[in-house]
Amino acid sequence: MNYLVKQFVIVVVLFITVGIGVCFSQDVINFPYPQIPTMMIEPQQRATYLLMHYWDNVDFDDISLVMNDKFMEQGFVDYLSVLQIVDIQTAEKSVEMMMKRAEKSKAAYLRLVNIAEKYLFEPNSPMVNDEMYIIFLNQELKTTVLNKVEKARFEYQHKALMKNRVGSVATDFIYMDRDGKMGSLHEFKAEETLLIFYDPDCDNCAEIIEKLRYNRALNSKIMCGRMKVLAVYAGENRALWEQHLAKMPTNWLVGRAVSKIQPLGLYVLRAMPAIYLLDKDKKVVKKDAVPENLFE
Image (cartoon, rainbow, N blue to C red):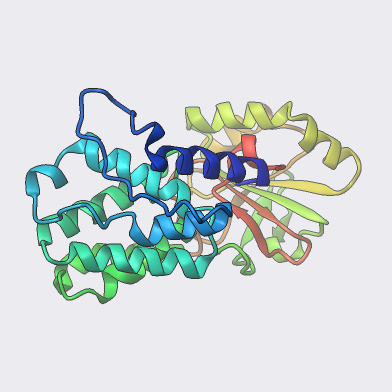
């Protein structure tokens, strides 16, 4: 999230909490946002206070309230909007406090767990955020509210999200390009690498690839030699891959994985295409990116 968007979110959310606009919907129960002390004037200070007291007025024992979709989901979405503009320590503390409060009712706890998964983990969510979801998973894995069987799904998710995390070196793999030459990610020399895992038979992949084909910022970087694109088919149907090669941009290196990307768990591809932005050392700068935010 860039600086201007962060400031906009701060203004909007804090404007709402002072009682001017608790009005997301006229036909639902208003979320009981905490009142921020008037002496707090710094946006970050107000955001921190809001997060530390966001759930104070929510009765997690009231199952009818907790199960009210519009009440809980709208409240949670607003919470996430503020959570993403504070430092990691504040975010972790706030999530810990919220989850501890919800532990008094297993139904309420599971409700929060499922909403967090829906908005932060599911690939089609506009708010998907691996780093934020890891904060929730850390709490879920150490709670005594969930048993071992219930935690199994979250253990898998946590393990998956820790792979190829932003700031880490992307896992190496072997590929074969359209000319039959073998190569590896770590040997792919570029100032910046746009790594795209795609499926030739995927309509969404075709749509995203077309957007990137004509993306001015991307093409400018390619022409200047500052960026290269490595598009890799992670499946095993060579005939399908070859059949669609002619549709791929000619200024991209297009290959199919020789390493078994998904069976070996080298990358967890929750949706296609999966786009990574890597620096010259192959460290992950952006993960599961979309064309609209690639070059922010």
